[in-house]
Length: 215
Image (cartoon, rainbow, N blue to C red):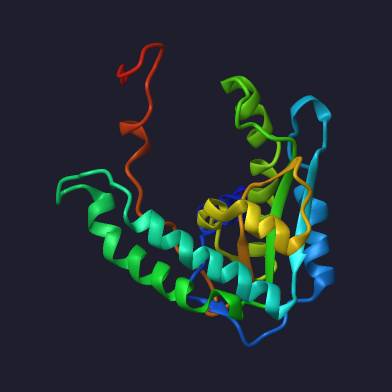
């Protein structure tokens, strides 16, 4: 494989908010192509219980965006982790907040929403079953974003609308036995490229044999 290209794709696929180009339509055929790639992702016990709802209707996008905005009000009131001023995540908070506010105010203008779903519910399931269920859809969602990025399309991975999952399901006619995993506004992105994000060094997060043991 061309590792330079692969590594660039993996390290520059961002959750795009400010740089979504709302003025350009996104062909449904291109989204279908990305979904076709996405479903090559791993799936627990080969169940292939995934599905993708592509939302182009302006009225439905507005209703979903309104649910997202209501969810943000709840999320904003939740306690957040306290970190020192020297923490990288604290230093990045301003930029992240600005881009999140932009998406909050404009997301229904995205040409399409993608709602990835998985068959089943896990509210009362044991931990392994919950991990298996979400592990059978989230890799596919990430593969979708990678495939879209390679084609000049950005996506913002959001989940806050799930505070009103039932209402979103009613808008889209999603059955009760199906779980929504995310909501992705998608659009062509502006500019030519993205850069790798600043992250906490992996060596600080990697342990060997025992938690906390950094070799």
